[in-house]
Length: 294
Image: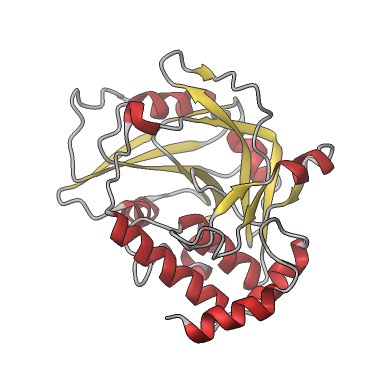
C-alpha cells in the first residue's frame, strides 16, 4: 500500500491533537499527518512526538482553502485525505480507502456523528450518512446556493451497495490521489469562492464534469463532530462573504463556465435524477433565474 497524507486544516480547534492521535492510532499502513495551524498557536501546544507528524504554522490566517493547499504542498503521500480537526476514524481506514480509489476518483467514507467528550460514536437514533445530493440552487430563497444535503432515501434504496456513486458531499472528509488534487483539480482556488465555502461542490463538480467519479465507500467510516453553539466554528466567516461565495459558485456551475469540462451540469443532474428539490421543469426555471438575476 502507498503512503497516505492526512491533511488537517485547523483554526482554534480544541480537538486537533485528539484527532491527530486518533489518525495515527487507527491507520494500519504508511501514513503521515499534516496539521496546518491557520494563524494561531494551540494552547496547550501540540504534544505529539512522532516522525509521521508535521505541524505547519501559518502566521497570518489565510482560510481553510489555503490551509488545505499548504498541506498538499508538503505532503509526501501518493494519496491525500483531508479531514476536519474534530473527527474519529475506523481502524484501517487508510488501506480500505486506497483499495478502491482510481486515479480520477474522490472517495468519501461513511459518516457518523461524534461524541467528542467521550470520543465515541454519538447515538443520534439515525443511520449513518452515506449519500448527499446537490440541492437546487434556489431551494432557500434567503440563502441561494448549491449544497450537499443528506439523501436518506437513496441510502435506503442502495443499502447493500458498498461502493457507489455519490453526487455531492458535506466536505469534512475526502480522499483522492495527490495527482488528481494537484494536476487535475489544481488545488483549492480562492477566486470567486473566497477562502472557505463550497469546498465539496468545487471538488466533486469538477471531478464529475471532468470525466472522473465520486463514490461513497461504506466499508469504512469516520465520526464527525457537529459543533453547533456548544463549540462554535473555528473558521469564522461573515454571512456576506459566505453568501457571495455561494452565489459565485452556483452561477459558475449552472452557467457551465468551466472551460475544461467534458459534461455540462445538466449531465450530472440527469445522472442522479430524480434529485430532491429539483423541479421537473428545472431547466426552464434555471434559465429564467440565470437570465434575469446576476
